[in-house]
Image (cartoon, rainbow, N blue to C red; front, side, top):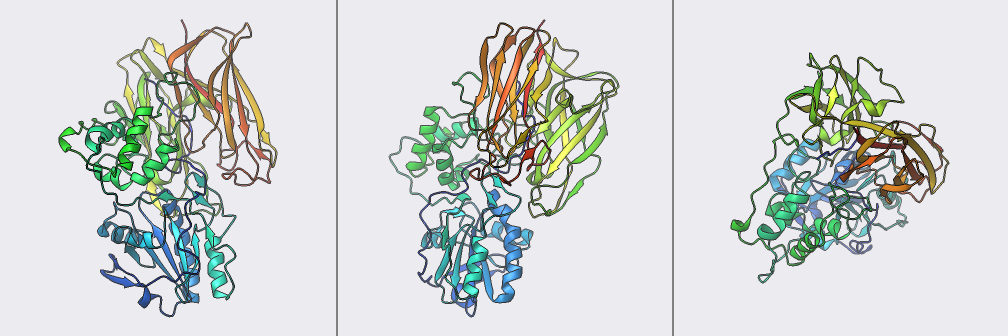
Length: 582
């Protein structure tokens, strides 16, 4: 089955609104009683009464592993500690995650070089006392240990949101107000990170158990991404994994956020439809509501066999890696990404090669925005007009590798070189990336040659403030073809995308409709039944953009946006996979 995503960014495991309607944390004005928690890195206990004594303000940061929003905010918190500690403000972080051990908390504090303590909560006891529902959440106390602010740090990062800079600064404003002896103007702003799971008591009479009912669903729908070394920010292979993330799972499943899928076609239309069935969804929700009963491990299905380090169906015949690592900085001025990095690499092929499957894998996954590997053909230079035809493979978190059916393959002509286009989004931790591409080769020339092309508009200009700006593009088939898959591509202003087929007799047919486009999941949509089209047919693509202030992902609603590679620019591309029909 052909599986592919052709260009993208994904910050994390799923997109959602930047603020949730959770109950506010501890009431503003209430005094926080003393508490003592272990500081695993220091090897001793930390007490609020002792360490907050004399502080003009104390910032308690609830954080955890596996949450990309926490990861994004650590550099900001370190920076704020450096600034405000000199003015008498104390900082302390608390981990209330069920899956994070004391040793792991100590290791995280050391790796992040946190200049303040990172404590391990007793279950979620402190989080419960302060009504913390999400991480990261900050609770700010004044000198009398009274709550003056609780909620998010600012609005720059959320699940699915990565703005170039914040447009609010709730935490900083709260600290400034306390230091200046003023009332905090905004005492509460909903946190917008990852749901914090609470311990549950399993119901003894539950008909649904993990090993017998839940594990098969997770293996089928989640484990491809949520396993070690893959795009999911945490694994979901064991009972402990699933129970420890139960509240987060319930939220994203109930709201249809996970597994990610955005086409409105009926089930069965696309071969790679990720949606849970009604029964699968009911199973997960009933299990969580029953307190996550484990059941008998003997009922567990076998864990599906997967290649270690690859998502391909078999070990690649050829692996081509960047010659040397690229050093990704900790941060950039704009905050969204470094300039595109290009690496040209020779191929080892002394004759034409036929690729039956391909996977692109990043070396430093946490900072790789996307990767495109182009073929530099000896017969045709790469240009702005033919870039889609030259694409051999791509990386985007959450999507699958290209796997063509038997008898179909992609041609890599003798003398072809590869061009890696890499876009990095620094996350506060510098590191080295050495990305690679793995190829499974067909035994010889196939019956069918797979092709890629696209309809696109490089002249788009989206007016400032436009909430529903429409852009169209088309592609005409000069000879009969068979369509196999579609991948719409836009950036942060992307709102909706539609593919239509117009045959020579004027008949119009919707091939793909994505009514709510999500930049964080640049999915491919693979037809269950390939669509044959006659010569003279056109694919017409229509894209809609929201460049208004109402779009929470919009970097700058006051700017007219044009085509560009960077995240804050825009694109309009309707990629499609096809082959000539004989």
